[in-house]
Structures are given as structure tokens and as C-alpha cells.
Amino acid sequence: MALEIIESCVNCWACAPLCPNQAIIPPAPREKRAGPPQAFLGPLGGERSDAAFSGGSHFLIDADKCTECVGDHADAQCVAICPIEGAILDELGVEMNPPGSLTGIPPERWAAAQAEIAAR
Ligand code: SF4
Ligand code: SF4
Image (cartoon, rainbow, N blue to C red; front, side, top):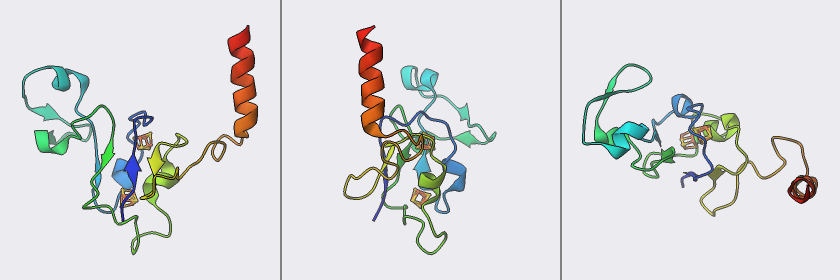
């Protein structure tokens, strides 16, 4: 029982502080990904070890720690705060905030608008 953050995550940091289980892992900063191991001060000022990073280019959820917020909150806190539709999936791979759920724009209207822009 765990949610998953996928590559459409924009690394906004909104979700990580809300997780009751510290299950949301930030990506390493760009310079750390490219360079040799070095100490890095996280956004809250504490030094982070390599183990504190997702190893990828976006946030990840530690499946061993995620409880889907059961017992702590009525709703999954990361899903409730995430501004990006489709960035978080449930254990079946279903989008928790599906297209149109946050913007209010029906997916078919979005697709039509994109097609119109592309045709200009
Ligand atoms: S569902 Fe809850 S426990 Fe799981 S990663 Fe999101 S905030 Fe953390
Ligand atoms: S709130 Fe959403 S977009 Fe922001 S870091 Fe978390 S998963 Fe990524």
C-alpha cells in the first residue's frame, strides 16, 4: 500500500513536509547529481547524506514508509497538496489527480486547444 510519484513531478517541495511518515524523498540538486559526492545543505538547513536523495531527477515515495496516510489523515496529504495533475499514482497506477481535476478543464477541451495551438 503505497503511492508513487512519477516524472511529471516538478519538484515544488510542497508535499514532502506534509508527509506524516517522512516517506517523500527529494532529488539531489543538479550540481550534486553531476559531480562527486559532497556535503549538501537541504532547504531546511540540515545536512543531507546521499541516502536522503531519491537518486533521480524528481521526488519519489519510499514504498516501505508510505501508509497512504491511513491513521494520520482522512486524505493522502501529498495528493491533496500536489499542483500537478497525474504526478502521483495509486498502487494500481491510477492517477490520483486525473486530468481536469485541478484545472477544471475537461481533457477533451485541453486536447482541442493544444491541437489548435499546434496548427497555428
Ligand atoms: S500518501 Fe501520505 S504517507 Fe504516503 S507519501 Fe503521501 S503523504 Fe506520505
Ligand atoms: S507536490 Fe507534486 S509536483 Fe510538488 S514535489 Fe510533490 S509530487 Fe512533485
